[in-house]
Length: 126
Image (cartoon, rainbow, N blue to C red; front, side):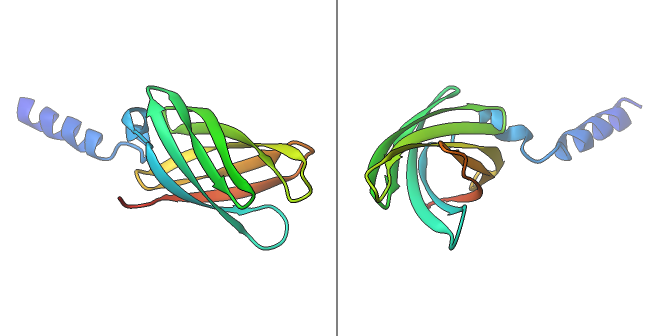
């Protein structure tokens, strides 16, 4: 009976929801983003450094490189940066989303001024 119970417990652990590992995830490293707001998708790269739940890093945006700050709680990620657009205006971009696997994230982005969109990110191999 004890053996059957052990098997049931082990099977239950093996089918834990995808993303349940994310609490222990470390997303440090380079991520390639595809962002869809209006018109064709845009691409950018963010290098994250994670310390506990705190995120920092740098975004390589078409108009320059900008500091990134945010948090990772469980499999939920939130981060932002302020960039200068092609007209010279400073705009804050706030990303919210979820870690889907050790190499994939998805979510939504909101820009100051109201524009919204969706994003996907893939971790770049070292």
